[in-house]
Image (tube, rainbow, N blue to C red; front, side):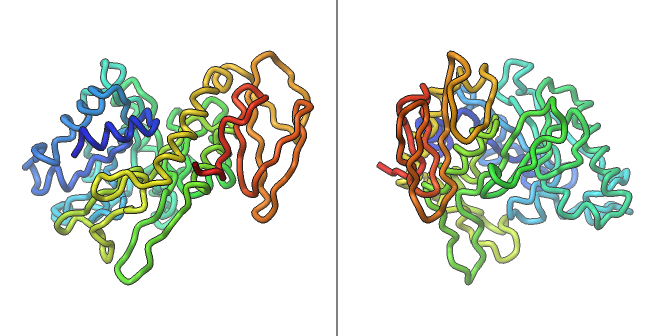
Length: 343
């Protein structure tokens, strides 16, 4: 399915595929490695490269993702003195890949650890120490690409702290250093499902609204979690998590396009890309409404009211903004896309 899934992602306007490295999939028994079949991550990355897309590689070692043991192999229990996700010698194990952009490959970003901040305080002084060690270890690999830590406000330079969630355009405090970009590593298109619970549904309009808002507030990278969730085969799903994973994503469990999410987001991506030159080169200005300050201009008109539409005047032209929506004007004149209007 890989070529088909990647092709549909590209057609949907994606530029980057984000993927995990599942340690317990690749080393199910200590010293016995498996990079064959569905575990052939090198082939997967090369297929992405062949289709002209890039990769964000989330190498863990703990990945969460509602996967058994968060990707950690069970045999780690037999290592004397080990403490998971803490600063201790037996746990310091990592491997590097040879497909980074600095080597001509497609990997443009890498992530170390995963949402560690949620449990960091449980380890006392060893929590922050582990964060510093993990960041330093990653940087020492000299991959030639930036490193990320998601939901990690204390990520040390030069590692980039990022946001996960439904509404990072509203909730993210921003990078912890002025030299870091604003990155959204997990825009949840749905949510994991556990047995006995209803499926979490999220509308195409709400997803598009928050992507547009994040970009309007100087966001530089948004990743959908998930764009395709797939199936957790065997016993790979975490406790009580169903085998179907994020089936409400733009591409469903079986690799089929789910409308209107896929199509609506495709239009959003095309519109944002049409503004890319301005977004990359112009100085961002945030104001209620006012006059254009430079020759290059792109406008994001935001209506945060959840119940009422609004009429606004911008550049001497009136615009109707549907409730809870963002209108994108690539030239500051014509509305190319509104997040609430699904065609």
